[in-house]
Length: 399
Ligand SMILES: [Zn+2]
Image (cartoon, rainbow, N blue to C red; front, side, top):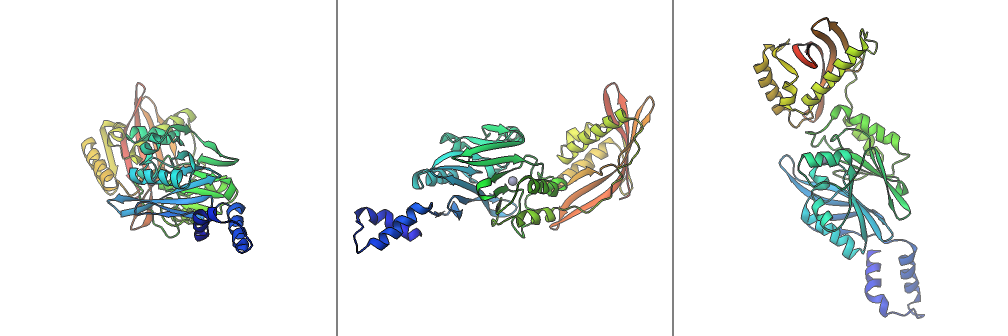
């Protein structure tokens, strides 16, 4: 096919379809008009791998401390003379090259670039795209995070779902929840039942990858939500490694499946308003904890905190801060996080002082390429002064 096109392009104008060459002529013309041609491209920096004549994986390379040179996937979707790009290549130079190939060699109009999440393998080349006058799309969460992290900022945002038009076809960009990052989306192409999953989706037999910003407890559920959100998957493109079909989603959901923990959904609620308040405080406290934000985490503790741990002993404010600092540093990139066991929380009032919180919670991280989780018991005593709730006692046990 490639050779034929080459021949046709270079020699056909001089030909006339005389009887001698009529058969070849017809074959070449039929090949040209019956369907779009399958193209490909490869250089040291960038590769375009055809899935079909309209769909390509673009592969560029990122140098990382942890894994060395890593191939990063994006995607290109073509309809007639227009195209959308999913993720920028991982560098400015590779991005310039992709734009040049699509515009100059393949004669396409680039309608926009869709950013999967705020990491470098998705938006490193965004400035190059903007300079070329190409619009960019991402979730509001990605835009917000990119601003916070001082990264190039995508232009057009959406909250849950966005439908873009490419000729008479559609692209559905949708947010299904936290996984590889808190802002990761997927893009679905109904014409081909194709999904660009980005880093949320793993190639078959891949490992966990970078999980420093991940929510590993939510990951499998998010994948299940993606599976429930679309009718079928004939093509699934992951953030790294080989593309495949719907099996990539099953593989990823299994990889991040958590050990089953029983939940006690009938915990008694004595005072709904107090329960809601303490539940919200617990969420805010452990949200800071899961982000390894030491200052915010410590701000929940009263200066006279007594922290009792059945393996660690009794700690005061200063020691608690030191231990948390060490914990956050040692677990900076293994997906470490705490989740409340659903239905396990009970809250009891302490008149004139505050409340007692009793619950079980699960701590997970990745170790030796395996998910490692433990479920423990927890009691916290909250003190209310004015509008402020502070933790004065922690009993952390059953480790
Ligand atoms: Zn990423």
